[in-house]
Length: 137
Image (cartoon, rainbow, N blue to C red; front, side):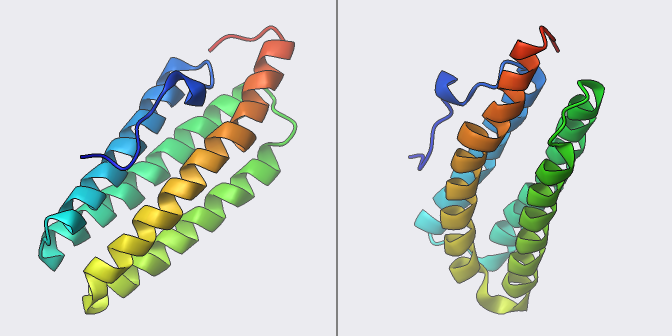
């Protein structure tokens, strides 16, 4: 069972970024399924680490694309990315201190809401900018 599914509504028109977003949805689903199945801390911590690592990777790649398109709101976009990374690191530290299942619930809730909102609003803004400039990536 999944708590979230990527649909074409989330597409930003850049296949690489769309694949990244799909993978982030998959990782959040993995985390949810571990919680549902009552997993021990170790596998939960592994998925939290994967989420943090992949989120870092995705943000780096997405920001490179925005730099290439000379996206005027890149600085603000980077701040939002940094804030989420910091929040995920805080969650990870809490999970490592023995509260993994409770932290996983919070990550699944906050992470999913953040991802959906970020893609549908903030990421779609650079997608629109790209279309207006006649750019393709």
